[in-house]
Image (cartoon, rainbow, N blue to C red; front, side, top):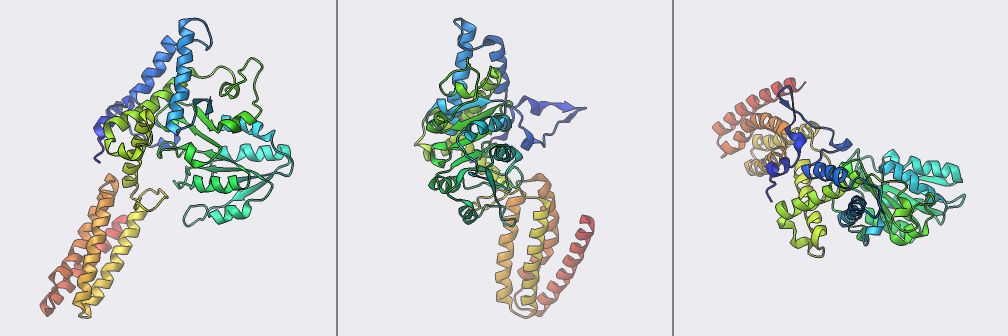
Length: 437
């Protein structure tokens, strides 16, 4: 499906900002995204029309009640939660994790074990190691493979014991981009009677999440990572949340989710979060129609949001230049370009050797493989402007090499012409290498 960049860009006012006549460039998306107009409008509307505390018998308060209720409904749709009561709002992921860790800690005893990972953001590590220090818990560390940047689930199996009570992992790494198999990890933890706490801050902006299918017990994310305001959102299984003792003041509600939402909430942030979900629904309805059928089991906004995230993820995969079978999303960089260059040269040298040895059929076969590899690189680099320049330079060097086998028909004169072309190509490659340095 073609991705209408102009339609999307038009939704973001910040993209029209210029500094000294130069369009501003935003390279800090991992630290926070820009917001579409609908988010700005809903937050402003909340502050103008619903600027009151909840629970009052007057119109402004009733509007605040609706803002809060809609935010819970929207995030329930975003995560496919079974109930809006399972959605808890708070300041941010770190603060909320520190908060909920105290409630979880009340269910643990000295000697119980918590598993944290070497891949995670510290916000999903230090709250648990501090809890362990306070309660005399044992912390076990789940490593990851430094070659694949993925967890070895056999290593998790080896860490699990009859004292394991909690497994804390990230849905996606903010450093490597690895998308972890949360469903499998949750199944291992659940089989041992342990809870699973998932940091989905980096996962939520890119992958449709269905908490009912993942099997985890808690999942937390931040709206500012997916075009919303600075707002944290925690999902927890209803029965698990209800079994915990919330740390709250006496006037706070006893029921979910209010018992975990301490103090007056950021209503305008909640309004903006719901608007961010509606932005995804707009993408799904207008730019991701091809994905509706595959999400037929979902209805309404949930279907549109999932369609949007799937279409966006497919677009991102093309940008990241990852084969469809690969579950780890990695960016394509100039280092990757150099690796492709080396592979092409190696393949060319093999083809050249066969040609010089008179194995023209073998050389022609290698030529076909080489052309396929060049086409593969072209598809990759076309997605990245900066890499496309590198591809064109590479192609200019390789074209004379390709001419070698195209001229082959077993004639000695052709072989001589091929040798001359190879020398010219080698000289050009050396020149390119000197420029790269």
